[in-house]
Image 1: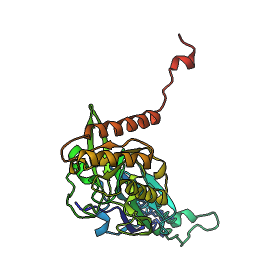
Image 2: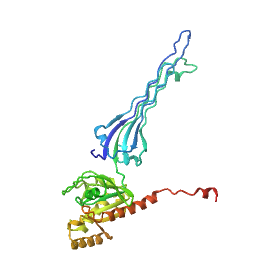
Image 3: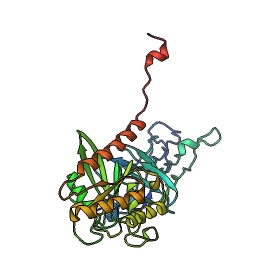
Image 4: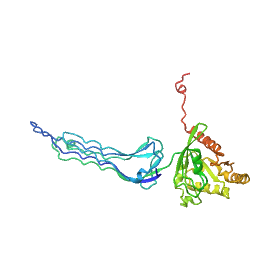
Length: 347
């Protein structure tokens, strides 16, 4: 399945059904009077977060969604039925913006959440509605009200516990493949990863979700390389895993480059807890490894972990470090349940 994290769609709710002009005509009833029913309401347009989706690819092939018009009113005081609703099914984590792509309408972060995007028009009144003591036979009815029509943007931000950042070829996809069941494309050229990937890691009988995004390079916030477009997918994470390749000549400068791009992007990424690791450690000797670890420690102010996804060295230590932050964040988010005895005075 192809990955698509942004799509523009055009929606229109249904028009209301027209009211009917009708008169009761039955044998032996000389003055039947008006009996035109009201029109039904037009269909609404909703967006619903559903399980089992992790891309907006469906909206590449269909961009227009139009609800049906409400059923028109009929004689014998029969009101028209409401038209069926149109439902846009989106992955959890989808944000919905107005046509300007800046005004947020809704942020659907949990499966089952739904939001009304366009309300169907009300049905028109039939001529029975206009009967008065001075107008016993009205010959007018209202048309239904028009539905709402607009364009909206769907923008997906993956929901993960940990996000991996680093320069291209820092070993991010290799690490994801080593600790999860994900199967990202792995090669030795820059920007092998073109789209974000997700995987579920397990350590000490506990699980958390890891997101891997395309690599950053200097100037990414200005659109250099793939740019910072995919950084939105790690905005929701609780912790960042920053990988610096042992093959980099200047590990400290590499670290500072990625940190500068995170700060330039903003949105709170620069404030997230960070686990720093020297990756691809199996490609250098012990002396060089010691120097690069020391350089990273001076640049970051923290002792980096040493990692080799190819040999498995350090993977468990990295996972435990990530899990520790994730567990702490989850504990803070859990609601506090008070003992009901304190509220009732029971002992």
